[in-house]
Image (cartoon, rainbow, N blue to C red; front, top):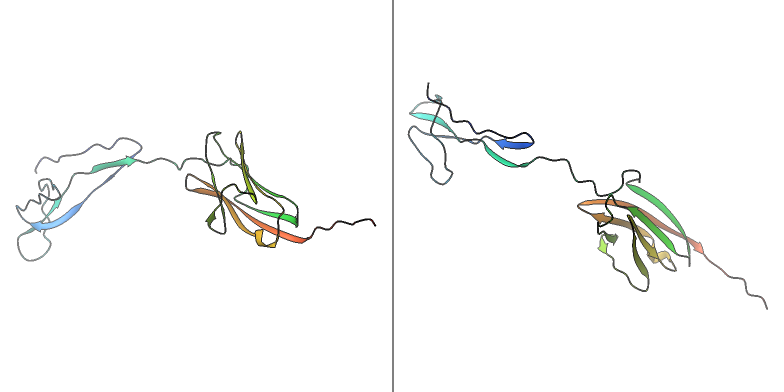
Length: 162
């Protein structure tokens, strides 16, 4: 039995085993196949299986925690028309930058919305909310998101004295 070359895979890494059917004695330079270590009869004719070494890939790790775990993934927020609506999320690390979206479109600070960051808190303040401001909002960072549905109800009114 021929000597088997083994590639060690460190703990926390993944390895893949690549196989290919080929004619006996064939060597594929493009893929760098290793020597055959076990012949398999695949059918009529001189065929064998050639196995490539297990090449380690990037370390396998858990997804990075971006948002604080104690907050819900989705929140319902109610606002009265004409008042401010505040959407808040909390990141795990104070230096994490977030991007805010409304109905899939990126938001930035303007006269209508204000983006705030204090410590680990991130806020989007919608000023003088109206029906057009209702919709789906999200706070996104590191491929993760916290979602909000903003519902703007009624009209604020002021009573004037004559």
